Image (cartoon, rainbow, N blue to C red):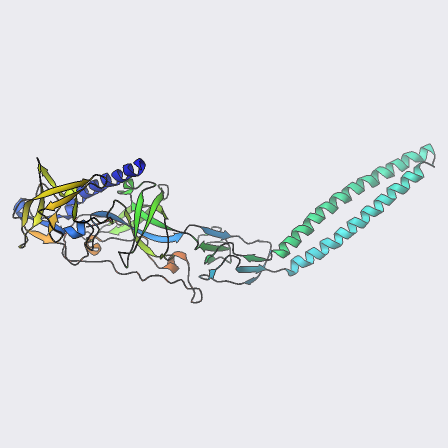
Length: 448
């Protein structure tokens, strides 16, 4: 319990730092004085997770992939007689994948068995020869005994060589029989045929497996995080996986690893500048508590779980939205005519685990509030997040997914017969209610 609480506090601490860094998204500078600033405000219902948003949180792109990839290498000395599957086919454990040509092997087996018979007969003949020489040796002269002894030694040497050849030939026959029995290669898992390589070489001339299967028994989620945010992630952190089609559909999991050795570079074309910048991202992997409802190749959102989906009765506001002055607490609230007002609120219980205060009086879920900033002042004009579901519009920030593409592009062509049904990837939400020239990572999306 102590370890989990410490982990949650680490997440929250990281979240607060992200919020401080993201303050530029909530106040748009139009000049050098405070009178020329506009405060961005969001609804309390969204901030507390009771609206269509889920609070201020870093969100990462992810894709559902198999826990296990099976690679099947063919015997280069054998020919493929028949291929029973094609790329995209679903297979079960025990499904026949392909068969080797057994004609040549059957011929080799017949030849090996004939050779074994010859060697066995040779052994019998040598044993009889040695027996005869030993019997004759006793009846010859002393001078002739030396010659008999030499013949017996030569026969015994040939016998040992023949016995060794018999054992070797038997091993060869056993292997040929086993190969004939295993001439049909079967799948060891339930999954999808990802690729089939007739040449054994990829497009870069590197060797690759003849056939690759993606196991569908267990799923995991692969995410990508920018080098600016990778420090926020650590193993055993709880996360929420959120559907891109229906955000109320979620799955839970934990981060099992953050791969700092594997980096990828992606071009990020800034919306306001013509130059192209390169951003480095790192993959990280999530083990799911349950994968029910997820589809192989499905694109999802990943959020660190800091309790944003835990709904309490009443208004529970994160402490970082409050301004504490002595024994009093205030929030920056938008009035009906969209002017900023510093309003006192009455605090109730404090949720130490998630750093949230119960607001007893002074604030409702329908109010719109701003993130505290020293540049805020009463009477400052406000602009509300409307119609974007609480999200900073990705089209304005030029957010690139990097985990783009269809299932076919990621895992190979899927045929009609074995088609995997994937959810439709919807367009990113957009809005013209925010104008900001801040730079943003191509992978990490701050949502409100």
